[in-house]
Length: 401
Ligand SMILES: NC(=O)c1ccc[n+]([C@@H]2O[C@H](COP(=O)([O-])OP(=O)(O)OC[C@H]3O[C@@H](n4cnc5c(N)ncnc54)[C@H](OP(=O)(O)O)[C@@H]3O)[C@@H](O)[C@H]2O)c1
Image 1 (cartoon, rainbow, N blue to C red):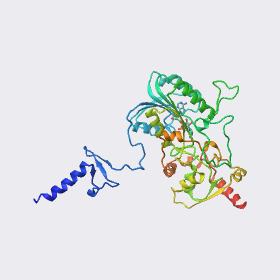
Image 2 (cartoon, rainbow, N blue to C red):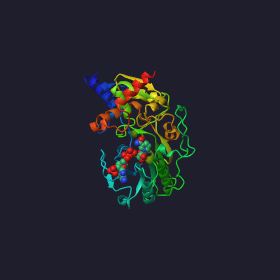
Image 3 (tube, rainbow, N blue to C red):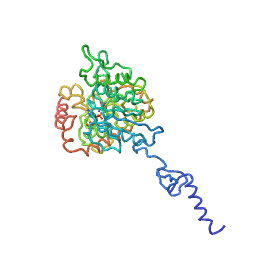
Image 4 (cartoon, rainbow, N blue to C red):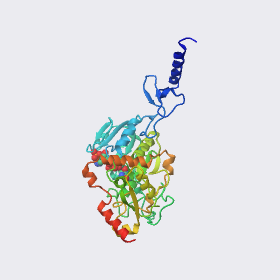
């Protein structure tokens, strides 16, 4: 044995670890959480990707040129960031009023009502129509772009379902199974309605879907989200719950704890939409979550998991809330007991790759985002009863028992 032997042995061991890509970590031969891979250029990355890190982790195999209609509203920024991170080339089209934290993308300015000139003479692989609240907007963009893009992805809504004969709300039905799949009845125009007339939200979404399919036959994807939630949601419809539960104390919980409920984090939705665009997946899809039936109680307890505040839920019957003049959805947000729209079939979306963050992550991130909002916004929320109103209703409920 030469004096060199121990050093040579240790060098060999380090070289071996490098050759299998494991650097540091106390020279452990069994890779462990925290181990890092060392690349030939000396840079490092975790050997085990952290499941909590925001997706997406991989870059698209087939980068596309994407036009996002919208892009600076609620669901737009994460969609744009995701597309850029995955290697796509992105243009956005807005009026240039709303500002958002976006990567360096082409910003086209116009108005979906009457000025699409910035889109003229251009081509894209795919159009992501994520802001249409008027079917006439879709008429204009599809007419202009049907020969200028391969694929049209239209963000619709489960509100497109309805009309005569559609299943209505059955308040006492906790809904064990979904009633609506993608072939369920959608709104059609009432008698006497003519093209160009105003249409309510559900009808405008149903009409927009038809217009997109007609202009891009076999080249359209329709995504029908349920309630979209998460950081950035200015409507407060889900945000109410993390905020209220984090405040602690006696929390008014609505109706039957067993009622089915669905929501989707805007980040899960937009990451999936980008993948649909990337893969050229066509068809109509409901898009909400989570991945299995969620009751109202499960949702509230799931939200509770992200706060250490002492909380006690008091479940107040639906009839009592009604007698108190407290309305589902507005006074009691993200709650519409027995409405088939609150529990739709998601088999098709799952087969097409829709995945979810844990509800706790959505609740935590929503709460953290809410704390960054201006005080004025937090004091004047767009949904949910005031604390005073909640206290009155709870007092009346206890007195009636
Ligand atoms: N929120 C939900 O729970 C929910 C549920 C189901 C479906 N959806 C659907 O999800 C989609 C996304 O919702 P969102 O809240 O993210 O949308 P949003 O915030 O209303 O979208 C606003 C975006 O559209 C742009 N915009 C507004 N008016 C425009 C115009 N006339 N011409 C060109 N650009 C215009 C805005 O920028 P400028 O202001 O600068 O123009 C902004 O980039 C919508 O289609 C909605 O119907 C929402």
